[in-house]
Length: 343
Ligand code: DOR
Ligand code: ZN
Image 1 (spheres, rainbow, N blue to C red):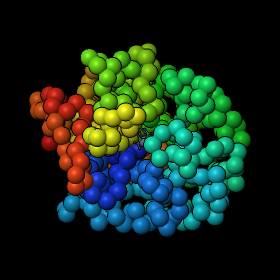
Image 2: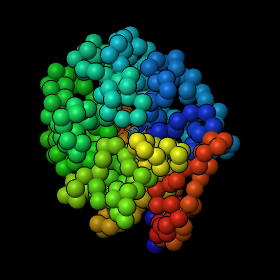
Image 3: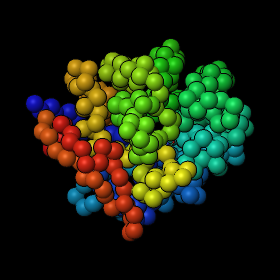
Image 4: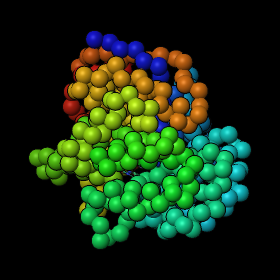
């Protein structure tokens, strides 16, 4: 079996920087025409100038002959000036502003402590149509880690959309039925990205046969009813749901450690993982809209025109990839057989 689809884009990607970036970028560039690049570097990408410099470093690392366009994001802080939003819109290469509630995940300490502090920047975004890309979790230690997304929706996102009814929001890497239902019941200014790993795994997977650090990511995967709701949403044909891998590489030593880092590395076989998830519910014919149409439509960018093909053909994922000079990366499903292959 073989399918041909319009070349897809990745609407949520961590490329890192320096030599580490050079190791992972070819994987994404091979599959995707464009990617929304997350700004959670150290230091974070908080200005248009630093986004321009980061974009240049990415463009310089693209393998010769490969067409790949990084779409840049700004890291929202309590102090982001509304003027910076205007400059971002005018730049033509900044396509979103990322909300990390302070302390919720990797490199989020400089993130937002209270969204009310960002009101002027958010009003400018609302006025100019610049999307807010939300890591939808609260950090409150009193909230159970598995409830952090649903509490965010109720206590942060809903009030935000009431204050800024025209703000365009991509709720990133959704993990719950609550998020699916909220997105469905909201206006067309609210969309969501869904990762391949949240379509394939529920929370049992993190503990299958022992603790599995390379399956650990944030937001955590949830119960099976939630995974099923995500798969239902992604394969429904509803244009509010789009592909965003959240491929988040960390070197092996930082993953297999006490206080190991959150992030699944999926860029090496992202489309194949999505194809497997879609096929599991007999919806492979819906993959193209999810992967190649819904994202550009939400971001108001042209759809790609080139085509790519996937084929049913068993192959084995490498056990490791190099990651910068001295580290290795353990990809999701390392050493396992996959049935779909990008050709
Ligand atoms: O698992 C995750 N990894 N979730 C995030 O929100 C951040 C990401 C990273 O940058 O490693
Ligand atoms: Zn992410």
